Amino acid sequence: MYKVVRARLGALVCGMRGARRDAGMVTSEYTMGIVAAVAFAVILYQVVTGDAVTAELQDIVKRALSAGM
Image (cartoon, rainbow, N blue to C red; front, side, top):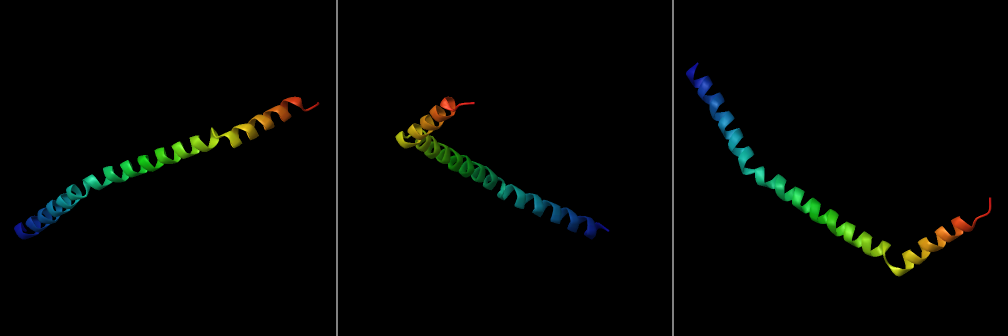
């Protein structure tokens, strides 16, 4: 009985050590995801505020406002 309990405790401790070694990996994955999302947002902002897109959006709004009912 003692050997069984010791073996199970040993497996549990090894499992906990493995989880601790990999704990920092989750934080780095979140960080990379946030960096990628911010980079995408910056690129999207630059595209939307560009001259061509702004002129096209203004044209769409002008046509919508001047449409007859």
